[in-house]
Amino acid sequence: MTTTVEADATQAGSEAVPAAWPTIAVDDLLAHPGNDRTTVPSAGLLAGVEAEGVTEPLYIVRSSDDAPQIIDGFQRLAAAVLLGLESVPFTPRPVIRIEALTPHPKNVREDLDVDDLVPSLQEFGCRDLIKIQRVEGGGIQVNDGNRRLFAAPLAGLTHLPYEWDEDQDEAGQILGMITSAQHRKGLTQTETMAAMFSAAEAGATVGKIATAAGVRHKDVKAVVKSRTDESVKKTLESSIYAWTFDQLAALGEFADDPEALEAITSAAEGWNADDEDVEWAITVQRTRRDKRMQGEAHRAELERSGQQIRVMAELSDRATPVWRLRTPEGGRITAEEHADCKGQVWVLESQDDKELKPYCTSPTLYGHAEPGASNGKAASSADQEAEKEARAGVKLGNLHWDAAETRRRQWISDMVKRRTLSKETAAALAAHVTTALVDGTWDVGGSLNAHNTGEILAGLLGLTKAQAASRSGYTQHLSKDPKRATQLQFAAIAAVRERGAGRYAWRTDGMRCNDIRTPTGRWIAVLEGLGYTPTAIERAVKENTDYDPSARPALSAGQQAEDAEGDQGEDDQDDQGDDAEAAE
Image: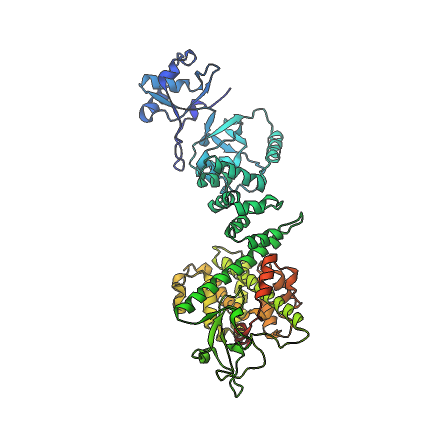
């Protein structure tokens, strides 16, 4: 067997860190007669070993009686004996210096991107042999393993394991590359996840598993949780859907919410389960959860300020939401004006509401005019059931719009934060900013500094609550890279666009508002041109068609029943005020 030659024992380049080779005692090698040869080391080799020790590992295998047998390195052993060294480095397989190798001039891979390979080589070394061949002029060419050749120095390796691939003409070398590439079949997602969990069970750390699999640490944690958390594990047992790491992480988020898990896994049922439907179900469930958390925070805030809290079941038929109240003269009563009314209580109208609403327990008793409706309900009629169904549809549609808004704004935020953009995308952003400023569309002048716009912009830019406190200081928290100026300008315009894209954009019933729907449709088209994929409700707005919320509920049966039971009428008053202002 031909192996590393002594002439290849040169010093590693500045980018490479010498490998931590295992060592073996010189006496153990000399105890085996086959290693004790009358070999005289060259003067150059002897001087090198005297100055730096043995830097090239000896290639050693074990014989049938477990004795160490040198295959390559007799001169290095002789030099170690003459200089009185107690041990020498060794390798159980042949390796060759990277500097002795040259890449194949006609490598079939056009993309030698090695970013995913470097961490694995750093952690585990190179386990697969490269195939090499001597070429005319004395060089050694890599026929198979060029990605490993380029990645190894970046990983700090000085040597690569190899086998000779002699007597191959150029055609044979290229055909070998094709065959080798086609024989490499990667693990499926399911196989990778199963292997990751098995490695974790065997004691491997999260970091080592992530490096070996080429995934993120949080991906490993998601897989482990999905196999150890009983609720998530049970949910996945009967599923044939190919869950992604991010989707598994989402299931882990809802491990303590059986109804949310049911809604998400229901979207993944069947052989033709659609990724978009699963992602949509996750987005809707996250939106519901976030709204509930906001509702709980609002309730706590009201309780701290001494406000009276009630549940809907406790209210009489006379109780009326403040936004419906009028003065005896017919004027509107604002929330601020009603704050001192002795009949005011705060109520969470629906489990999915992000804040409680003020009610007056008895408008007549406290001197208000009541416009013929109580508890936010429509007047009693034969169509009451149909009205209730319509309200439930509006409630679900609003939830869908809020979920789409969260998804859309996250996409905008991610684009704004990108380090680089393609020339086409950068030009499109600049054109949109220019049109908005020069043409004065979307009331940029009046809305750019509005309170709601500032909140949206802070979210798009990823500012913390403290950083977002003062709009005049936003730029000091942002990148100063002039190349990102267009992205930041676009974010400001996008905040104005988003401010005007309220819930009324999707409505096609009696609350339809074309002044909001039309520009919102144009805005969604702009984003789609930049690469955004609209959800079904956004497509309906863009195409000016009706949207049926029940077609994509993304709710479990329990959640739908809960919403129907708790429905007391959809209160659009808050959105109506914001949307009307934005449409002006």
